Amino acid sequence: MNNFFLEKKNNIKKLGEDLKCKQAALDFINKTYLHQYSYHFNSLGRPIIQYPQDMVAMQELIWEIKPDLIIETGIAHGGSLIMNASMLAMLDMCEAIELGESFNPKESNRKVLGIDIDIRAHNRKAIEMHPMYSRIHMIEGSSLSPDIIAQAQKEAKKYKNVLVCLDSNHTHDHVLSELQAYADLTSVGNYCVVFDTIIEDISKEMLPERPWGLGNNPKTAVREFLKTHHEFEIDKSIEDKLQITASPDGYLKRIR
Image (cartoon, rainbow, N blue to C red; front, side, top):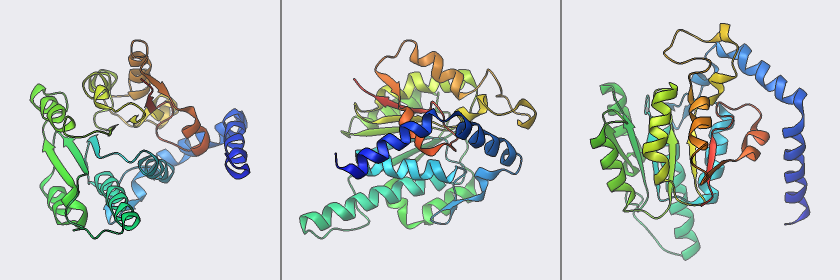
């Protein structure tokens, strides 16, 4: 490891230990939450409903790990599907350049599989019209339906390197059930990313009326899941680096 990367690693560790910075980041999240800050951003023209910091983190992970399948629960406007598909397209492009080969940009051995209980017609149309759609497959139905889970499992068997993202219903029971159903599809060395764990840390008065809230959210589900799933560990270095993230304790790396 050269001096630049070693210095960066040490700086990230120190930042993660800086409680004043952590509090400042949480203050920012609390103050901007009511303004729906995460709704302000697009990915290649589609609303993504993520913090920019998490968008960068996902791009870094995809480039580093080079998955051939990304499974996402929760589609909404499709911004995350589009962003992740664009990163898979970038991997294809870079590999072709390195090998000195030409390729059909509409064809790929990589795919993003999106699952949502309700894919609204206007969102489906916009996603299907996007240039990145050739790398996307969508399934409509509950992520906890045995049939949907079986479809995802069947698809995952076709690929060697699978990344999982959970971002649908944010109640404890739902996320825990998703973890039990989908986390095992994560390849060793890859990640299962659980979004919106920040709900546990946001001031109670800031939270809108939703089925989830303090004590009942993705972070509490992650804590429960990890009690019996030691093949995963929280990659703290990611949230230490980001500071502002919707997914503290949500970047789960499969280590065995």
